[in-house]
Amino acid sequence: MAVVKLLGTWLSPYSCKVIWALKLKGIPYEYIEEDLSNKSPMLLQYNPVHKKIPVLVHDGKPICESTVILRYIEETWPQNPLLPIDPYERAVALFWIKYADDKNPLIPKLYRTTGEELEQAAKECSEILETIEEHGLIEGKKFFGGDEINMVDISFCLVAHWLGVFEEIAGLKVFEPHKFPKLNSWAQNFKSVPVIKENLPDADKIFAVLKHRRETLLAPKPN
View 1 (cartoon, rainbow, N blue to C red):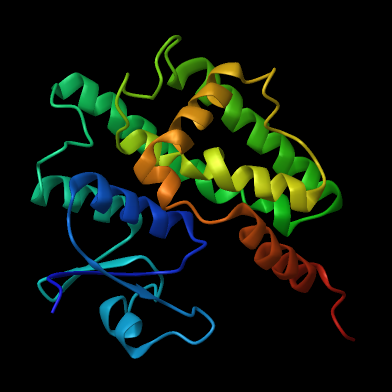
View 2: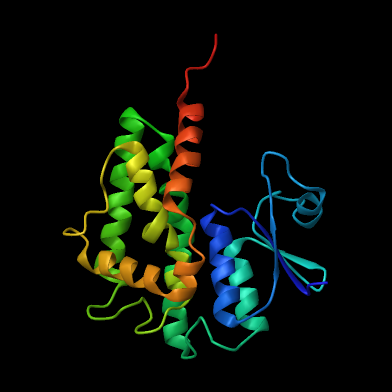
């Protein structure tokens, strides 16, 4: 019986964040795919408050919310650290992780809205990218923390992979490489890391699922 279990869904960036952290740390685990349209008794038992994935179960004890899980993983298994040791550098990293947590929910609005709401979502998304480009990334560095991937990079995975799918579904382009050269370079570096690349959901499959979801969300409501 696995000591570590992960309840997640394949297309969720939040599930992927935990998978990558576990893989980067070299922690064996059992993955359990959840159907969020028919939530399992296990998920409802382990996350009775939000009833959401991901949930990490370690020695029978559940930990919920992806960033909380990442911090737990970092503190429980200190090998291959995902946060800087230096107190100031760690504080900076935690600042950007908090920024990602605050802003990530705004990005999926691109595929969930239309008309003026979509225009506003695109504007908000562009402002997020501008902030990361100007203040978050250091010129000449592959990743947020320097030459090695860390928890900040993982926290911005929505920008690196899922954003492009949202744009394609919505029929617009916000993440222009010429406008955000540092961020574009970072995204390519991030997705080329073997652990990330090998555990990255297929963009075409994400597109198919989310396009159908968009059509359902935006379908005219019956009178």
